Amino acid sequence: MRRILLLASLVLLLTVPTAARAQDAPAQAIEKVLHDQQAAWNAGDIETFMHGYQDSPETTFIGKTIASGYQGILERYRKTYANHDAMGKLDFSELKVRMLGENHAVVTGRFHLTRTQAGGGDASGVYSLVFEKGSKGWQIILDHTSAD
Image (cartoon, rainbow, N blue to C red; front, side, top):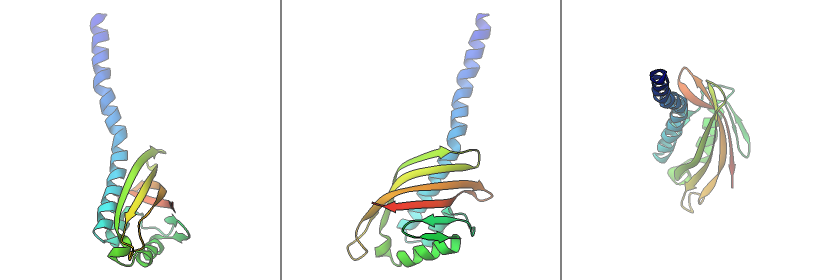
């Protein structure tokens, strides 16, 4: 009986970390999308930054206005952040990923743009993102960003 309990305990100890890592995998993949976006932004590359969004007419950005569709969101970014000074340096922080199922997640966090006065000055705020896992991996389908 002791051997069975010992064996059961050993199996449990070995499978719990594996299960925890499997649950963390989507969150890590989603965080990588955001880190890649941050790197692209800081390189002045809005087109690569946009790879974090699903290329769909239903993808939506909500800020001061609502932009619908991948192309509409891209044009909004191009207009609002027309040059490197306006883009500044982006930093995401306080990321929290909450899984809504196997293929959907909500991410909340903060952003901070460090910019020159000529570029519009510093800006910061909060965001909530809905991610969907599709054929191209995890991508944003809804972005709601509010400046402080």
